[in-house]
Image (cartoon, rainbow over all chains, first blue to last red; front, side, top):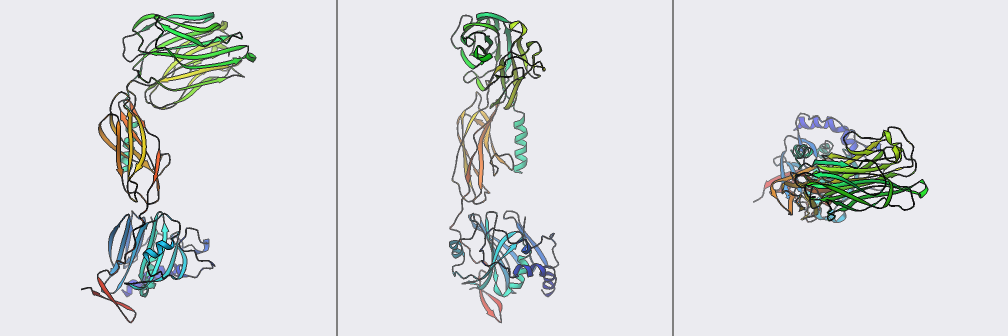
Length: 182
Length: 373
């Protein structure tokens, strides 16, 4: 696990730093499709799979992401075109989930937010880009999981909600930084 | 895989097997001067699904404007004749009139008889001709048509262009030009029925036919070979559908439109003479269905009637375009392109699946999981 973290973090540290660097926007834009200033863009890199990582690729939802190979992956069809993909290691208490739902709006409505986050907690929201898509990262609270780190973004006709426990925030950021749309 | 099927289908559609129209016989009068009618002999063979097409181009150098035909008979039979196309144009400041026109009659009696075409009055110059075609649709023989003219400069190439909607049509044109007539020649691909140097060779009247194997834009041209001059020209074009025409198809609105799936609907409203052997839908996100298009195809023996096909794998909120089609031995008929927008299911909400089935404890900032009882 330690070796994975070292290699993974070394490759992605720059991206992770950019991901969570404060921006100079005075008004936060909660998951819109407007472009950020060019200077905040994360540069594209050719896909390399570091030692200790695996690639998850989903042609239907059009993305791939790297994750630590100590996590097991499971896809769950939620019906209506929605799906949840979980990556977890129950022995080590590590994991995150991706919830994807068809979505036609250009911004996440408050109704949609409260439907998926009944607690309504959204703290320290910050916009950044994921492979060209505008994303919002924030802290929230889930009745089961407790404090969570959330990254939400809209791409194509889907809303992506990526969630992890706040305790694995650093690794989560590194994983998010490997996200690529196909 | 869908793309491969589509390409195969397109390949198939590109070489339709259609009922072929064939030329039975042609006839013409030669140049006429100062006449109120034209009469000439024509032979109709024993072929099936025949139509007799008569063309008369004329010029009237008077204020009478007598160039349109009023009646046509064949073997003294005047019933069944009707005017398909007529275009008249005043020239020389209105003192002259030139006209091109097409008349036709389905199912003429086989044999040899005189055609008598009667003008509205006396015309100064004219030429007429006829062509009988076999294999023409007997109920709705006429397909696309066009008229064209050049009222001012004259002397330019004579052209008519139309868009046929059925594979295997046949076109017949007719023109009158005041261009220097001696050099007027029919375009390659057309077969001349007649070209007469009327008005002592100062004008030209002519007619031709051409096979149009594939539905789409077609042009008939007579080349003036740069001779120029004259006071203008008029031309008409009428195309005829084969007896085994492609089915007539309409597209109906999609039903059951959901997030992932919808039902496409269409109808064969007329078989065109032969039942369809395949029917289906082309659909995709291109508004013209020109790219990225998938097809559904059902093979069988299909007469008139509605048909439907479910499609799936849609993306929420995306607009899809589709049209129905059906294919028989006469070709492929298409309905108009309609569209629908895939819906969204707002009832779906996120469930925390992470560590589902476990209870969570937090010890020193770490997650400790225990299997739920």
